[in-house]
Image (cartoon, rainbow, N blue to C red; front, side):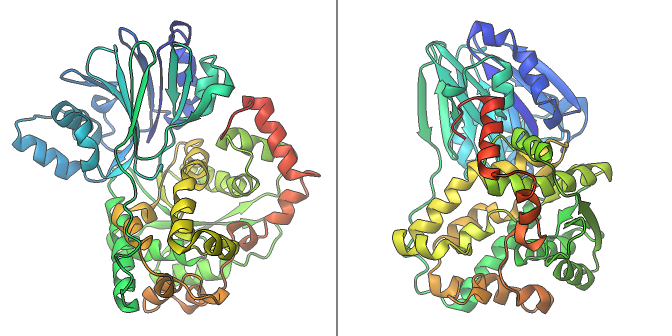
Length: 475
C-alpha cells in the first residue's frame, strides 16, 4: 500500500513533489516523480511485497509507466501465466506483475486482478493516461477535473497541495476505468459491477449458506496473508473480527491481535475479545485510548478527510491502534469492515430494508462504503504507515452474500442479526462472542459520550473543520 498522485496542468505538474510530500505518511520508504510528455506521476512507497528498491515506483516495464497503490492477492498466479506467454521478471513483487499484465492485456487485464488497488498508467510516454480502482473501493482514489486540467491522488490533501480548487474534487468510483487525454477529455467506463443475482440463492438452505459464507471468509482472510513484512490483526470483540481471527490463526500461528479500550471506561467489547483470544491461543494487546479533546477530533477529520460523525469517532480509536501497531513493528493489519453491510445488521437497517428491499438496500449500503468505512480505515491506518486489509471484501464472498435470502442471513431478533456468521462459527468460537447483542464499535468501547463531551455540537464542529481545511469538497 502506497500513495499516488498525478497531474496534467503545467502549474500543478510543477508541484507534483509537493503533492507527494503531502501524503508521505502513506509511504515513508521511498518517494519519486516521473515526468512524461503531458502527464506527470508521483509515488510514495510503503514496502510490503518485495521490499527491495527494485520495486520502487513509478515503475517502467516495456512501454508501460505505472504508479500503483495496493496489493494483488493473485499476483503469483498471474506471474506464472505471464511467464508462459514469454514475459520475464526482474523483481519478486506484484508491481512488476501488474505492469507486465497491462503491457500484455491492456485494459483487459483488470478482470483478472484480485486485490485492493488504485493505479494510473501510460503506454505512450504520458500523452494519455488510464486510471483504475478496485471492485469495491477498498483503496481510495480522488480525482479533480477542470477546464483543460486533470489530477488524481490517494488523498485530498495531495490534490490541495497541487493548488487545485476544492469544488472540482471527487471520487473515482469503484470498479471504474478512466481514460484521460492531453486535453483532459475523459472516457470513463465500468470494468466491474456487482452482478444482479437476487434470485440465485433464493432456495439455499441455511446449512449450505453458512458453508458458502464461511468458505468466503476463509478465502478472503487467506488470500490477504501475502506479505514480506510482519502482519497482525484487530480483535474488537464482535463476530466479524473473531471470524477473521479464527481463519488467520490457522494460517499464521503466533499472529498477534490488538483491541482498543477507552481510558477509565468499562468496555463491553473487552471480555468477548479476551475470550476469543484465549480460545484461539492468541496474544491480545490492549491499547488504552485517551478521551479526546476537540483538537484531537479535528486532527482525525483532517486525517480521514470527512466530517462524518461516525467515522471521526471510530477514527479516534483506530488512530491509536494504528500508532501502536506500527510502533510494535507491524506494517499490515486485518479488520472486519464490510461485514455489517453484507448482512444488513445495523440497528437502522430495518427501515432501509422495508423501503428498498432486502437485496437493494444491502447492495447500495455496501457500495457506498468506498467513501465511508473503507476510506476511513485506509486513511487512518496509512497515516501511521500501516496497511489495513479487509477479508470481507473477497469478491466471491461479496457476490454470494448479497445474493442470499434474508431468512438464512438474519433473524428479526436483535440477538441474531448476523445469524449466518453466528451459526456458521458456533463450533469454533466462544459463546461470549456468538450469543451477544450487536453493538457499534463506539458503543462497545464507551466512546460516544467521550467524543460528545469534547465539543458542544460534534457534527457541526467536524463539518467546520473539514471546510476550513479542504474547502467545500463533496466527500
